[in-house]
Image (cartoon, rainbow, N blue to C red; front, side):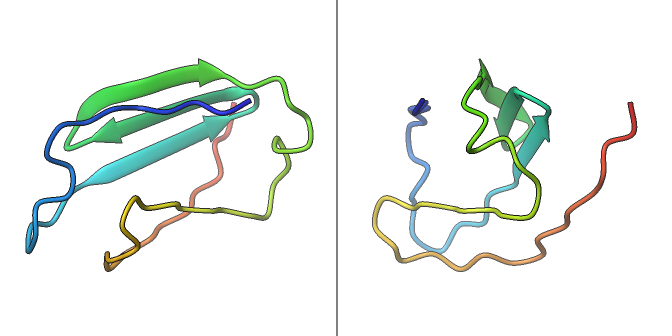
Length: 74
């Protein structure tokens, strides 16, 4: 399953963005500057494993800073 969120002006040069990704079991939520832009259920068990992250960018010209990973306690 591939989900895509369209966000206008996400790639303005020299601008910092706050992006939050929450993956809780099969539910994935993505917020951009504190606005929810994607909320999906992903039943693909291949991708629902712990231990890996992947960030794909449209132009591959971004700096990623301050990645924090937390365990969600249910």
